Amino acid sequence: MYTAIGSRITVAIGVLAICLVAISPAGTWAAEPVKQEKKAKQERKAKKPAQVDTSAPAPKATAPKFTTAETAGKADSCFGEAPTLDKLTPDEGKVGDRVIVTGTNFGEAACLRGVSFGPGHPAQFQQTIDSITTTVPSGGKKGLVLLTVTTASGENSKPFLVK
View (spheres, one colour):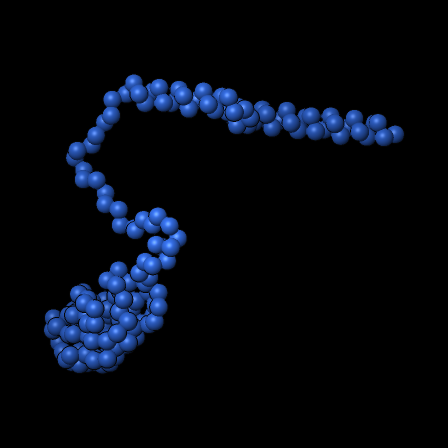
């Protein structure tokens, strides 16, 4: 009784193995064909002359590269405390007027996500360590709005009167 069940299992496993071999690429089962394939690729590359595209400038790397976990741990991070807005100078103005926002925790320039005068009304801005210079955008509503500074760590707002 045990031999009949054992042979059925063996046949089933054998059929499964044959099916897997039939649908799998040949290079994944043996190390030798992979080595031969790599060698053939290297030979093809050696025969072709290098092509250089001079029409487009090379892309610049924007992400920092770290050699160790220790140097990565010392890198600037965008996450920390939410920004604090101390003062808006002036606290009222019309479209196109320049506004200076002073405060803390604005972070690095890459960490500042945006400045807006009310929901859906983003503004152009320039940032220094402790201030942001922006202009009142067009298309917003007149009246009291919230000037909001958004960073990777959060956001903070102060009331601003658009005339």
